[in-house]
Length: 264
Ligand code: BTN
Picture 1 (cartoon, rainbow, N blue to C red):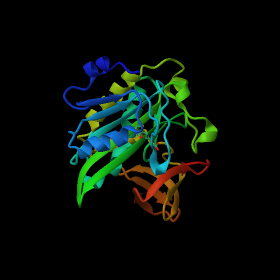
Picture 2: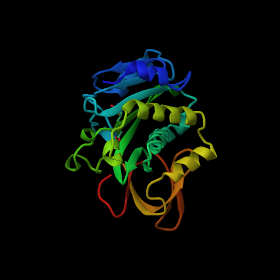
Picture 3: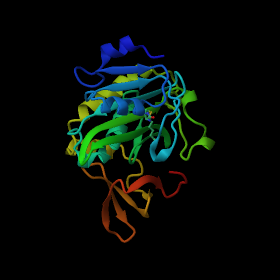
Picture 4: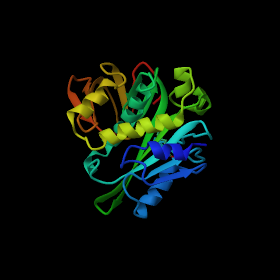
């Protein structure tokens, strides 16, 4: 169980985490945040759970959040931050915030585009962005983040497509989940108003996994191979394809893997 009183006293001033909805156990914090959003909850609303019984990942995968062992939370963002045409970049922004918080603990985290955070090439956190529209207009965006903190929270290799780890396994010592959560929120708070800036692009690229390496992108329609060059200012991926042409690709591709590895 998380110490809510301590969390409330440490939330980034006047911004994220107000109001805060805490559940000892719930299905999915994203589902709760979506429901709150449709009832008119304000931007900055934070839904936090100690355990998720139906946690969801991208591409219809499940996400495990065992009790007392992980961080699982969803933040409500309203249109404008980011603009509707930059929703894709919210995935990488969530991953960047986790990476920065982990760096605060002395760990070197990488972002596997678009939404995974890696420690020593193993996945430690994932981001699930879901949005709601009113006709043509973007109504809300929910930024869901899950971090494996304690050793028991990382699923075994045979249960996942990409090997997982936990913050404590990588660090070799105990980690306070609240400290980590506050670190992620502080980083998010700093970046949310800075979509499209060179600073954000640089911060992403410094942590981009497989930069300069041969990668394969998988989409619903196609697969693309090339050398990873970096990110565009709006969080799409820049790569040089096999014909030597520089391409910028976005959500038409859902997952990436280096060419010397299996899994996505
Ligand atoms: C992924 O890597 O596929 C994304 C995982 C996202 C998991 C988080 S945990 C908090 C929020 N609630 C959910 O049901 N999913 C996200």
